[in-house]
Amino acid sequence: MDIKVEGKSIAEVEADALLVVGFEGSAPGGPASGLSKELYDSGEFSGKPLEIAILHRPAGLKVKRLVLAGAGKSGEFTAAEMRKLSGAMLRALKPKGVRSIVIALEEPFRSDDFAAAAVEGALLGDMEANRYKTDPKKNEKQVASFAVLGGSQAAVDRGRILAEAQNFTRDLANEPANLLTPTGLAESARKMAADYSLECEILDQDRMRQLGMGALLGVAQGSAEPPAMIILRYKPAAKPSSKDHLGLVGKGVTFDTGGISIKPAEHMDQMRYDMAGGAAMLGAMRAIAQLKPAIPVTAIIPTVENMPGSRAQRPGDIVTSLSGKTVEVLNTDAEGRMILIDALTYAQRLGCTHLIDAATLTGSIVVALGFVNIGAFTNNQAFLDKLMAAAKAEGEKMWQMPIDEEYKEALKSDFADLHNIGGRPGGSVTAAMFLKDFVNDLPWVHLDIAGTAWLEETKPYMAKGASGVGVRTFVRLAQNW
Image (cartoon, rainbow, N blue to C red; front, side, top):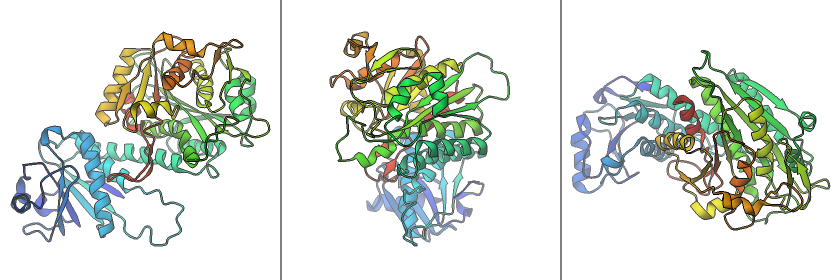
């Protein structure tokens, strides 16, 4: 889709559809005011969120359709709501054969944040998870261009970069596990790094064995697919003013059967997205490479397949992690935290001063927060506050969870330094406590995205499947450092 800024006035715009935002009890102004007022007066349109009304061949305008897009109450309309609105309108118009769309931003919403969000929404809404459908008509009706009237070129470019990075993440997480193995994920990372001038290093199984990554290798040993550790480095052109170095660590389990502690068959097909945390870090690095923040950023993605093969680790096995600490594996389905601890330790060896990990880690976080909020845990409140401010600006909801020392009691082992699980009570918290034991005193945030990384059904503004959650937040955090 061609993304651009529209420089003409509303009256002079030529397109298949002109989107005008309408609020509850308030018709848009300008050349479209008379036409929209009729729809309000008749009750055909009220301005409720994601409501749509279409006028064909509107008098006084050159566009083929005037589209009123409902945005709810004007005082509650944020850039996040603009993103949803833009995506929903594009998805509603695309099946109608609309090929060119212009969205008009009126004051007080004519700002860079709203312009970027409009572009993001359109590109996110346009993506379909139909790559492997053989229907020759699946791409017949496509939107060829989307333009923003009332936005700057810089804002439009930023929106495009972010949305393309998020869609890159969604594409990876949607891939079936037979087509995206750990080796395949590493190759995707290598190609992306080459395309966007990032440094890339891939640690293979032999190198990880030499280093002593026993926690990660223990998970991988049940699969015929070899594991990999992906390292991507972004270095700003100018020397940073501080020694801060952001580390982004993402869980990359390309398929998770649970291992010997095997999962129920129902919904196991969705375990293709158990690498959504790693995919989010790859997407974030893709955007960071283009937007060039002032802080160095390194992404570390440990990637494995968790299978119950003849060599798989067993409940009761004890492994030695890269940190030197030993872990008794009580449940092989608690594998994500095992690969993350070696990655977190390695990130510290690479000089990262601030760590964020993202992982589809526990079902417990879904019980606690549903499919709305990411669970956020930290050992440093100031760092989490900074991250949550970035998340709020990007419309990605997070909720802080407790991480009191008392929870660590559940991880005590009679045979090793700690267990890899703490039982059912507070499962997401004890998982976070397990990770915390390996970050020492560095500022660290753990994000459990198990409830937000996958959409169980198609939304008005986005297709069913991987959501790409986290990408925009990580990029904004780096840019605002």
